[in-house]
Image (tube, rainbow, N blue to C red; front, side, top):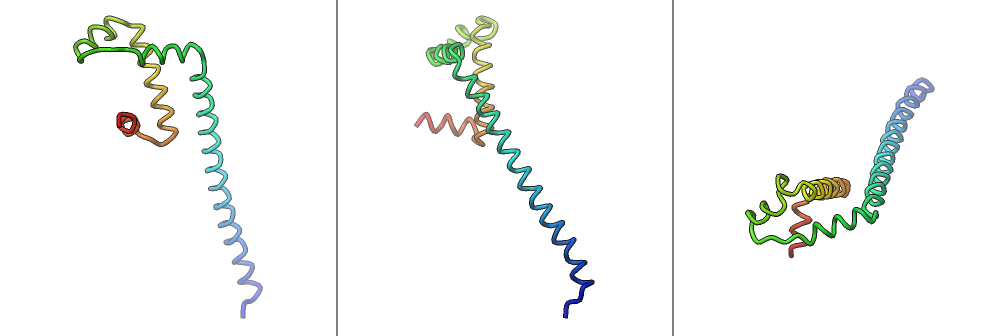
Length: 112
């Protein structure tokens, strides 16, 4: 038979276990909330007219080979284009990191 002493020892252990589980759930929820907030900030940045113009200009770049690319768009030749490429790529990396995807996987999916 279970006596009072055993029950009194069991209650703190159960309470501590419940508290630990609750704390883990709270941390997980906070992490998801932070990810959603960061995603929304990045999304708002992408919706600016200036960013869309820069992105469109980057998508319109044309070159034949890597040497042609370096002649037209290298940082030593065209610093403004380099700045646009760098900011767009870093933003893409941040969004993909939030989504848990690798940028090479995404590019391969779009190439198909």
